[in-house]
Image (cartoon, rainbow over all chains, first blue to last red; front, side, top):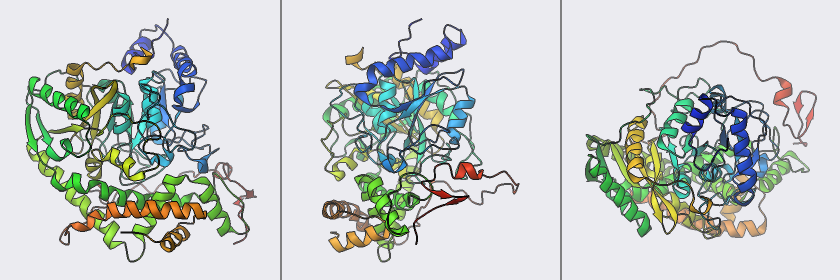
Length: 469
Length: 93
């Protein structure tokens, strides 16, 4: 049978396999054929895997998820040629669930970026408009799912790297509650923020994949067991749900008109579906969130990226002594964005600056968590645009790091508090997808899936990019 | 807050990065702009607020003290840029 990979959801693919209408190997092949046809233009994949090694629905992984025997670079030259000797826990769980690996997807180097232009292996293009970025840093995973090059994928989210590219590519992306998905075997960026998240065409697919990867892992002591089992959403009404609209997240400077209008329509749908909707406030979280993030994340990164020294794996540039070898290896191996963040973090942690920068940022983080906790006393879920803009042109923000950082201004605050966020398409603005995010208290994924599923049905967004349909 | 060229060189030394002259120039400008933006956190008086290092309140996560096989030497050395016997080999310190 012919498989329409552009339209097929992972849930439907599983049903086809279940009814034996096609084999897992045939399904895997159908995606490889789609990749051969469309990925020359998009560059969503850094490498593909020819043979299906499972009996289930195949999957793509962002290239910071360690895969035994399959090169894993985190989008960096410094890890070029690095072949992990063990799988990440999430890779093991997917394999045990029968999923075969389709390949490894492109990303901003070390997950640092919002456009996938920071990859050492060339940018990924947006399936809706190849002149535009797919968002980032999980831009390869987002583009692969949107263009029918994978039924679903895993990405990682530190400041918005699952939610923002999901929004820009018209798909669904979950940043789970911190601690619910193992980071064992993930190339680390900022350890108190990094989370692996499912990127899918539908909310139900997202819940199905979250079920596979979530739960405590003895190899990652920051993980916990889910308080309630993951539920597949069914209901299409929002009766009894209290939805808060944080003023600052919805009226932030820089939110494009089209994005704002689509979010307002989504909020109106919440009311029509029976939810109780009210305004709320996160006064300091949005105003100070970005500054807080750009102190905490680079500080943690400067420590995590110290391991790339040319000794045990990855690139080595020879030098007369070991010190010269370190310095040359790191200068040649890291791109500009990791260098900027390593230096920013080193500076913020250095003697004389620690209290004013890193120490103060950690206190702001407490304020952000407290403000969100206060909002959740009155509401079950908060809603806002995911990204202030739709996909921007490749090169548009490449020379201005600060402008790029603003792409995550709406996703960062809840990330600092360790909260889950689900991004769902709200519609098209000038032919490009826009998205909204649902934010919940810790461990509220089931509520996000329920509200997200009901809204997804009501919105009726067609996730197949118009130019590929 | 602006960062000077000398400070960029100092931080690069701490971070083990050998920067080219062009990089020093570019990063001095870009890091100054970023530091000015993140300096916003200093506007808040948070002297009575506790810092948050981690989003979950986890304490004393124990593991069973059971011996397990560790990574075999050949696998540990599989990605080494250079080796000698069972060791990673580096240039003289």
